[in-house]
Length: 193
Picture: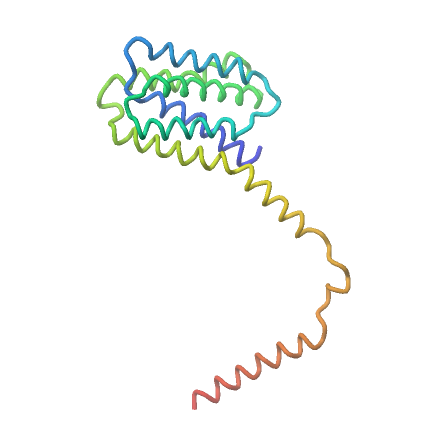
């Protein structure tokens, strides 16, 4: 697994908890959470590869929307369920059986939604910091595949073996370099007197 994969796992776990910790509507909170979870499980399913950009961009948009308009809790709960559903798919792809993967991914946002009803659980400042963290991580995950691809291309270009004629330095380059160092040393000694 690559660093991008681990970052996607972290985004799904952290995002599902942070999004679910907002002030939830009393009756529709768990329904929205379940709808997002079910939609993600059905849509993503057992796909061969999950594109991190397609997960990170909506997560960043939801985090930014919630920071901008803090009263929109229903889309955030749907997003929390969606991230948890994608997380369950990632757990299954790692080799976890279906039922434990679904239960393990669903438990944190459900507990976060239950505990968010208590005012002392997650104060507004803490929720804003968590949303800001999710937003920053989502932007990192969205740009990471492009940066990693560019880095791999640069490494590949640097691994190409140059021609043997370029492997050795010409004698005049070594002589000029040594003379420059020697003259600089002599000048500094002469300047101290």
